Length: 361
Image (cartoon, rainbow, N blue to C red; front, side, top):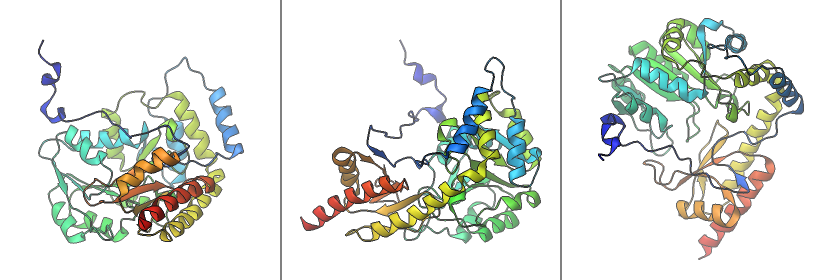
């Protein structure tokens, strides 16, 4: 029998199932999850919401109560907010709706690999404007030139996996000098200094879209909840192409409780930011290790013999981090999620053993 994969659309034939390379381990700092315990008051509010949610009816297809709560958070109304099954669903739908053959998408690698993957799935050409390999800054002139006739530009702020912020002035320049849609992915912005977000510009910029998530600062990675703040016309377009009922009743209930009680997570976010600084300081003391300043809940570090260190962290110390050492522009780099104090100590202790042993051999 002929291989059925030969019938796949040509643009999809090179794709393989997503594999985050998870392994059973004592300390998992590989996925940028919020590993801190949820405040008991918030957990109680979520549990109450779950227990009172009936399962025999379909969910509100547009998650309007949650949209209203998110809109209130940003001082707007539900016409500018759409909720998705994680930020990934919204990202794919944006590229599905506004990309396609002949509609270029501009990215700034190294960045979130799914931008280019989703664009390829939608048969949109990808134009890459590589970041400076020393500090991961973006060449504004090169980006503006690449975006001149593009359909969309995607910036991540803070950027994954490098941790740096996209300058506000760069976002404004793209809006002023090009006709491209500009997507700013702010999945990690709650860990950045106050004023880092550009969500306040959406009301005056119809081509600006800001992607946010409840997976990171809110600690709800398992609930798969993301949202987009954008012009009502963009929201309407995504509502027309989305999978119906993609956000289930339990996720909506959890999200509404979390957003309503969001002040309870402020202490957790502050602790992660403090631990980020402590982790960076600890890395600076290790021989041969260098790390970049991060505004997210992770730190990118360059480590001697990084892939081997990643293996030994996993196999000898049961500590899992993310290996980026084979990614162009990230040679020798590991991405380290900022965990709890105990988790960060376990990581630093293990790295100290491995790097000092290697430096003495």
